[in-house]
Length: 295
Image 1 (tube, helix red, strand yellow):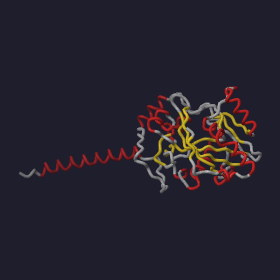
Image 2 (spheres, one colour):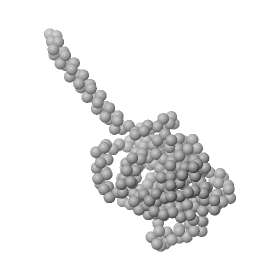
Image 3 (cartoon, helix red, strand yellow):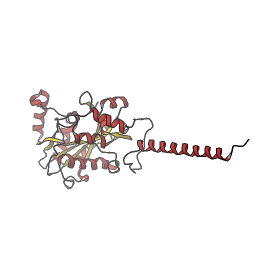
Image 4 (cartoon, one colour):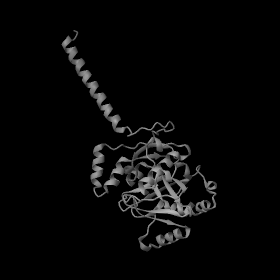
């Protein structure tokens, strides 16, 4: 016996509602996993071998509650900034929050490695500008380090691979954010990418770094106006003055501490590269093919 028209209509309506709900659920899942701003860079490819769970809004809220003592500015950056995840060959494999990228639990569990940069800015007297990180920084507060250390973000302008342009764009942005250095004082074409290093460094029991770090040199006289949310102090040093800081840090004098990435650069590269700066032969030191694994 054929079903009545009324029963057929009722079945069709239920099927339509079910399809609509299914589409709605799919849309929610897609929106949850979609990046905040999807770059158009054609070179980017995502590896299916790396699976990093994305955090739901409920998880983010819980995480923020667990870190109630975190400075408000640093908390906002931790959840708003999306770092670029890479493999050990510096191929982009995805992105995640700055928060996740600096949790040692996530770093160890998923081997999260993100792209970073370290700027070494010299004035016309070939003195190196150092900064002391703010006491509100989540990782390595109050340690002395090179001019600026941060991350290119998962956005089109900072993903450009040619001649490390994306990283240089990010360096210009952060020099303004952290030190108040105007963009016109540090044109992107004046940065010299000298090399890359890969390292891992716990900060405390919870936080740490696991970075593929681009090392950028620039020689410019600049106007500096440090942002207190990022920087506690600054100083220019010559080579002898830096060696004295190293001695004090090694001896534990005055509570002076250096960031682990800065110390790696000092111990492996800095002074020979600094000599090239003074001689005007810096291009001779460039090696962007090698990734130095210092872990």
